[in-house]
Image (cartoon, rainbow, N blue to C red; front, side, top):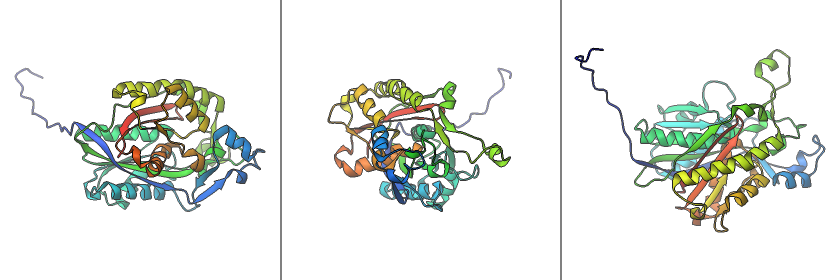
Length: 338
């Protein structure tokens, strides 16, 4: 281009300096499934599952309920609690690995059902880190001027991809959805996101077969599997470093937190996390896994929703949230609780 050529000036939008979470919503599978209902095929016991995972029951949805229904219910509650007009929501992001169809997206259907049509809508597949990823994106979209208000949902119906005879992960899994509304703020309500991946460990957690293999009769219906010891070591030792980085990036210390909401993967991981971070007794730790199970992308918002219901005193305080899972992927940020 010649130096004498006049380039047309483009408009680039800018948004507010800060964002925050306005409200949470939640939906859980209709059925509480106790350990005793699952121990037969894996030759185990209620005591063994409690000791290894901390799970007493997990919520699982009816056959006709999908991640779409769970997402819609959670999003509708979050919107109602936020006071934001659904027509003003112009971005809907659903983090899930449970879309019953590879397309269309869960998010587009949810946007329409909650009255946010024609909001921009897309799904995020980052497994158990999906909610943290989606929060990071909503925060950036709003501060960048690409959206005004966003709904972020973490939703899973993992009971569709469990093998009753699998001892590695299936007995941990539950169904549910948690949602938030994010919008502009006059103070910093969402800290910097520390996120990343390690694809060299892609085989540590994931589906055991492809849909093409199933279609061609080469494999049974694909279900989730994990290498438990590998995932445990990675979560306990590597993810604690990420959690510390998120605190540092936000400019706060563990003693400043009101709550800690890790992905609800395993109670032993949660306990070790708290120990490694040196959390004071004043920090409320989310332990929703005990009665909900591991709900992957839904676990952080579900656990936070429950924590706010049971401990309203943490409202307005800081929460460190961190998700980690299949990919392997991870994401963490400090947020102000509504």
